[in-house]
Length: 414
Image 1 (cartoon, rainbow, N blue to C red):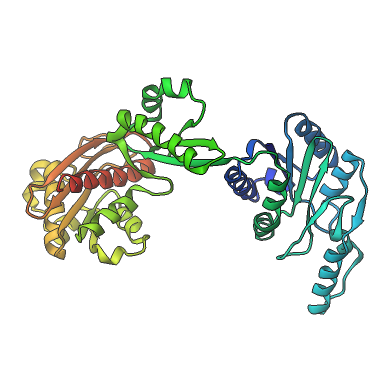
Image 2 (image 1 turned 90 degrees about the horizontal axis):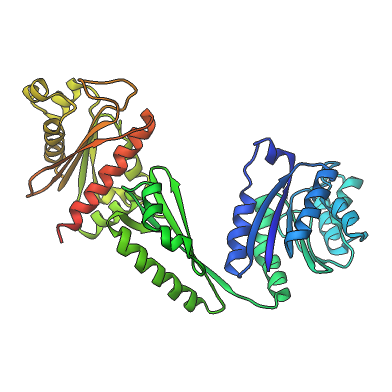
């Protein structure tokens, strides 16, 4: 079954709210083997909505509309689709009773336009709204299925999960499972990754391979379809094995994880503690680490040593080090990492010093960064990075590179 989602609401087009419903519905539909090929957003206008429906009829079997089921004049989804399909609207008595009960319970007068919310397409299956007033509905008409859902996510999500999915699965002649897995890579650009996977992407069938660049990282989504879920997983396993053979050195995790999350897991698994000395990153590394539950078990603390005075007075970097080599140097990064670990009694010290931009500093161009990594009992490692981007991008990328370098260093400790 091929599906299309039409979101109705001028507020979506104006950017006043995000279309989170489409994302939710697409993921839910994928789990029951329904392909979503189109997302459409249309304003509160019956002519344009009718046009969107006519296009959807030509290319999709299942058409899901969200929003426009409320009591006001601009809530016109039901009326428009009723005219489009040539069916009448009728009161759903269960929904009307529920609406009347709500107004009685809240001691508020019920106006005539509130009755409008109880209208459904004649012949449709009413989808009960356990968290609001307007019911949803599901109607088979000709070769198409139409589902209407309320716009508020707090109403749509539980309604679709409890009533919408069963209605769809009962109408499907063939149920297949769609399984997805996201592989996350850092240290390689989208173009370079695409080049290495070019033949796989060119010849993809099942599973599909979809690269996506995001926040200085690249992800590859593998999606397989099969009536048996375990078989779909095997298809993904085979595809991943081939991809890992080409890109394994850049791989760091799956699905919704992050570099800092993987670092946290690595530190916890080895019962190691860490301290940080941050110059250009201004505490960003510590902020990301402390955003994770359990950070207190690994993070001893840190210092934001943005000026040379702070580097010398707080982290005890030698004045001659800065005089001879500068604050933006491997030598400074080394002392920062070693000293902050010593001062705070941590097993590991990490430091970030460099030029965020946009101008130069000490003769170094923007994006020059030195990361220092001290592991107790091991020689301190420093890494020079030459990043390219805005001031904020350079800071974010510096933290990600630091996490990646530390993860790799801990792997080498096995």
